[in-house]
Image (cartoon, rainbow, N blue to C red):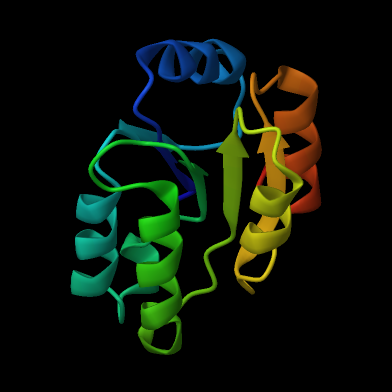
Amino acid sequence: MRKLVFIDDDPIDHFLMKHILRGKNYFDTTTYTVYGSLVLDYIEEHKSEPEKLPDMIFVDLNMPLFSGWDFLKRMEQMQDEISKDIPVFVISSSLRPDDKATSSKYSFVQDFISKPVNSEEIERIVSSQSVAGS
């Protein structure tokens, strides 16, 4: 089962991603949430059950309360305990080169995607991750 988790505080970005994925067979399930901390709680709870873990995560950097940066820091602390490599894609409307450079220091971050995300970008990512049709 192929699972995507999309973490963003903007409902418009949720809508855009749903529209991009509509009619595609990239993932069996897609979870949309604003709560990155709950996603990490779930990963921690199921860290030794790879079949329950997501196959890919998209996370926005700039969110109130629990930011994408908070997500990345906590995910890094858990890396050695997780029984599955979960590629993370940072999405952001930030134009700061520092944000891209800093996010790339996390070994599990695969790419930094500027908003708005488009269908070609998702196609490229899914193809590069061998998720489509797996």
